[in-house]
Length: 355
Ligand SMILES: Nc1ncnc2c1ncn2[C@@H]1O[C@H](COP(=O)(O)OP(=O)(O)OP(=O)(O)O)[C@@H](O)[C@H]1O
Ligand SMILES: [Mg+2]
Image 1 (cartoon, rainbow, N blue to C red):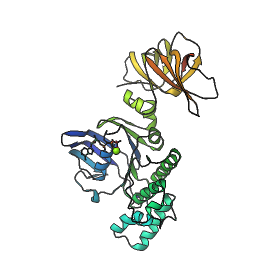
Image 2 (cartoon, rainbow, N blue to C red):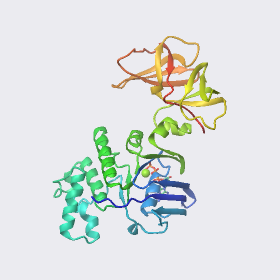
Image 3 (cartoon, rainbow, N blue to C red):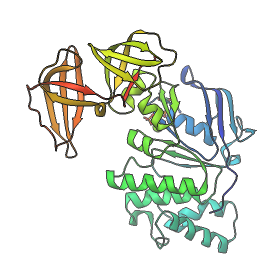
Image 4 (cartoon, helix red, strand yellow):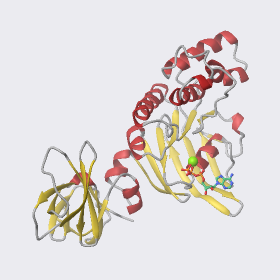
């Protein structure tokens, strides 16, 4: 697969309305050339709409969209160098695997001999070499997924869009496929935008993650930034589990400290722009270690729920009005319902909620 010059994608104050229903409320977004950016957010927040706008399947109500330096705001889909993998795959059932993958090249009138080579290479790249002659209903769902990716890749587009490409697959296949997609994306350097509901998928494959809520951007950052430095409670709880806890922020010798019910913890997360005083913290479950017995400070309460999940045990501890969620390894101390416990808190995985 050749390496084309990668294009960035820019959305500038993009609004999309259907009648008086405004589904994108002025999106400003810069997607770096050659990167993989994931869109994450609840159902109906506008993820697919952003992909459809980039593809040219919809036009913005107002605002501008750039592919590289070119303003494509009013350009039709066929005139944009963009390929999309749909959630439904949208393969042609009456064609073979090879015909499906080569369809776009045929439309572009690429000669048969070159087509044949490129089909073989595209199928090889997704681990589907040798499946050319099969019909779509003769391959599994996971294999169809790979064919859909090959059909988009073969066009060597400047931009690839993936709309929840793995949602129909089981966990193991999903992990393998997301690694394959990431590898292909990095090998080809094709700028990619990827929609998923799965936070693990978003964290593991992306250069950047965009969390959206009701047609607006909540936060854009690297996976680490979003996980360790969420700006709002919405982002903190959407990107994995977070305990939201009241605390008191103080500063001493350029260091920041949080006092959680008298338990003093040095903060290593970003506290720039924060004033001393009451704040809310997002505490990841892995920052908490349960210890048997009572304590006068910090988080302390009775275990109210326990669930064995194989790799560990999940616990809920009732503290004041809050349910504190933790995950403990099955190798260490075990706790029973009704046990009185308190928490040791590590600085990694604790951040101040700004919003
Ligand atoms: N053609 C359309 N006409 C009217 N409303 C639409 C149309 N397409 C989408 N919408 C509305 O726009 C909003 C955003 O839809 P979109 O498909 O972008 O959501 P999404 O984030 O992809 O959700 P999901 O995770 O469920 O796929 C929704 O409220 C949806 O009902
Ligand atoms: Mg969608």
